[in-house]
Image (cartoon, rainbow, N blue to C red; front, side, top):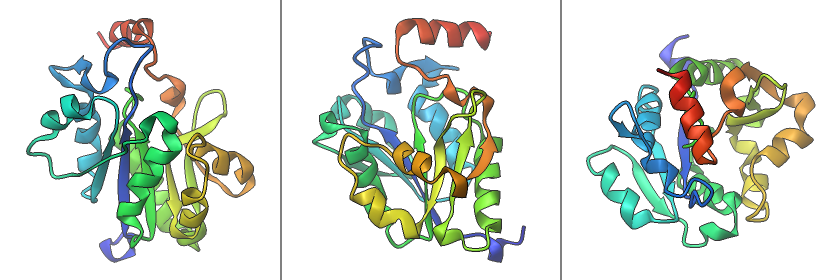
Length: 202
């Protein structure tokens, strides 16, 4: 795809959760000798797009890890109200873009190939500003990472704080372009999830 065909997209990495069931901030779990948040950022930075990282719980612990990273950091002081509020804080930094790519920090199998497939689908859509491109997991569920064209920004910004982007994906499923991400339903909620992941990647 020619560079001129590529749409102007911003990235939002949601990293505001407390990780209460994990017993520690998931963002700081060490994978391949670096905090998980930097591992995920490594994939996102390969896209060469502007990145906003949304922090919330334990932001004072996580912010120093991002020192020297070419990202915009925003804090959601109301992170306890739900992921929707954190998502909205990130989207507000990209309202001048044609679309926004939403990612979460606790999908350890996220990789740059999936991300590039999402971008390619979005770039090739006839009316990309009205397009949603979402990952499809092995159980056929749709979710993040997902790209929303700018025509969806108002709806995303008007959702209640407890409601995430998945609500719009589900209610508009017939319009959603899908990209296979079979391991996307594996996320890190509890210590046993982390142990399972480490066992799978040895």
